[in-house]
Length: 490
Image 1 (tube, rainbow, N blue to C red):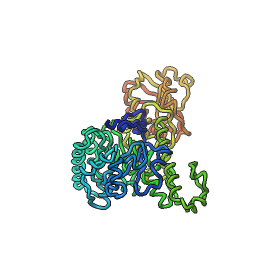
Image 2: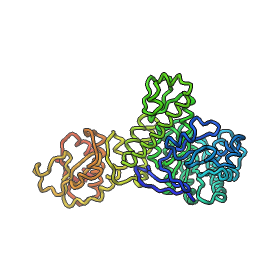
Image 3: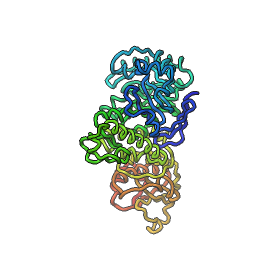
Image 4: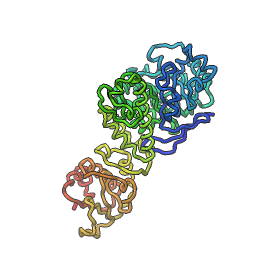
């Protein structure tokens, strides 16, 4: 049976989904803990008891292991690892990129992965690092696509993953996204992004992922290879990444690093353990520092934190509050904030995937003015017919009480959205939004909506009624319309 992906709910470009792999169905967004068969600080069976539904291991390591190769071939991965969920295998491409050529051809690794019972199989793609010039990255992408096509001759039942490569070059990522979709691949990892995350280049990460997503089939399940720290999961999910794999839970534990959704701490820096997992509730900071099982306990804590963030993202997508989670997480590091601002530039691409109604809209600062709910509202204002005359009440007062009974159609005004007919007062986003006291950024955003409405109704005589506090913003944002006499201000 092939891999299938069903999307059940969306928010921004994030998706709740059901990934069917053979006869198994797992929820997305999904975490794949990385398992090295030789170093199991948390065993696969323990991970399964913690709620892990799928994991990833490395076919190259199994192929070179005296201890595990024959067992995997004879018994299968699930028996060897003691795990009943979905098992994905990487090809050895990472080892090739780090250590040079490995003694494992593309056809050999694909056939070996099938032989040991892998359910999601990865060909020997080439991960182009960020410093690859365009010509070199293009040559490597050509080889990757050739290897994907070769692998499809061996794995023809839909269980092959098709990596999207292309280095830092967005045109190559777009090409790769298009080509893997043309091959009808459902499971599509975006590769070679670990160096960007390790160097905190989240702005470049957004460019790379959004380029790939722009040409990939919307039905593809997207795996962000190597995205192991929970602090950036929300940003990645907002871009439409459905699957994450993590070795960080173990690697950080080895370095005495304590994960949180906001970042990580050196264990030596902590006097308190700010977490509710079993490890943190049964140990003090000092006890954890001195424990003989410190590395394993830290790994367990890190895994709990990572799984909890995945659950938090699922809930945010269900509620339609993913933007607020992205905003919260990305304010924890300046480079994540750079990525957040970069993502906000892709309004047209984001709007196409976003849902039309949500639980709420909380204004959290000027960045909220660039959210999809605001930009989509502004675009839809062009559909409102205002007749011969229209009164826009900026200050929220009733037009009938201001001597303007004959002003025609009366519209109210709520920044950052702008004007709205009273009939829409209880609808999303106007009715389900909470705002602090109006600031200039919020009001300017509302005026951009007002501009759309006025421009879309050239035969309407507009009157804007309000106080003087923000009149200078109206004059600034609607300067051209004012010069043309398109509205009067009272």
